[in-house]
Each structure stands twice: as structure tokens, then as C-alpha cells.
Length: 219
Image 1 (cartoon, helix red, strand yellow):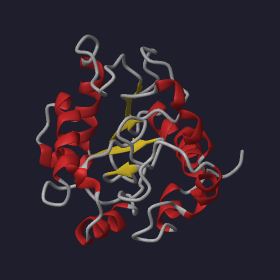
Image 2: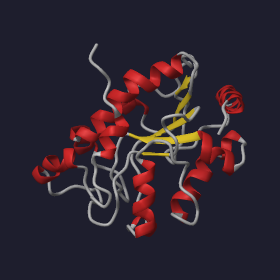
Image 3: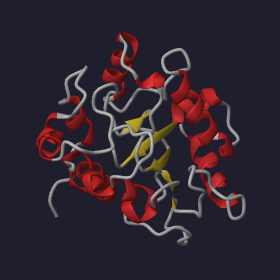
């Protein structure tokens, strides 16, 4: 088996204020008409301490709002975040993103301060869009393939061995999973709403697993 890609090294190759990762540039040059924002938002496929987080939540692609417009503080946070060790974004850095992740982690019934240190968010796509509808281009981007390779070779085996809790909350098929599938170790793909919220029924098992691993992990 070939060596898995180093997701963190890949993103540290991206210049701090670049709107497109250099590895993706040729794809965007070939397809200038697309639904991704590559002028007024910084790229990034993960948020939070992905290298060490006991709980990882999977989504498809980041949304877009006015808070994504780069400023010096947001650029600096992105640089730190690409190490995979930075907590989830704080309210004073990016209020909309902070509000989004606090809503998506509420089902774990833990304080936001703890979630920021022990949960990571991982997307297949790195580019923001108001309404995601460009699945074909997403699949063609090298940055997306790095995420999927790293997940299949590193993250999912860790979850199947019970070393992490991984919960797919969007686009299970794109991750190579199936919504509603039986758990594999602590890899979960529950039935979810389009907004990325798990249904209440059947939630207890994965919440219990996540809480237990968070309790065992120091921030």
C-alpha cells in the first residue's frame, strides 16, 4: 500500500493569503465557471485540532457569508489552523463560523470551550460556496483527493479501531460511507438532515462514544 498523503504538509504549502491552493490552480484555470468563491474567501478543508482531536465531524464543503472575507486576523488564524493543532475558530476571529460549529456540536452536550479543544471539522471541499452544486469539479481537485486518501488510509482505520470517534454528518457517499450504516468501531454515518444535524433517533450510541473518548483525552 502506498504511503498516505500528509494532509497537514499539503496545506502548509499554501501561501497564507492565497485564494487557491497551488495544487488546485490548473483545475480552476481549465474550469473558470464554477460555484466556488475564490476571490473573497480563504481555502481550507479542516478546522480544529485534527491531528489530535478525539472526535472528528465530516461535512462536504464550507458555506459562505460576509465573515469569510479575509482580514489580517483571519489570515493569521488560517496559518495556525493548517498545522492541525489549532482549536476551532473563536467568536472574535470569525463570528459566523463560530456560531456554525457551536450549533453543529450541541448534540454532544459538552461546553463550547471543551468542544473547541477536542473536536475537529473536516470537509471534502476546501472552497466556500453559497449553495454547493459543483460536485464534478470538487471531485477533480487535488485538494479533495488528498482529504479522501488521508481519511481512507489514516482517519477511518483509527475510528474503526476505536482510537477516534468519526461522525459523518453530510454526503456519506462522497466519503465512501453509507448513511445509516451500522457502526464500525467508532466510525458512524447516521441519518442526517441536509443542514448536517443527526436525527435524534439512534443518536445515543455515538454521543456516548464521543463523550467517553473526550473524557479520556486531555485538551
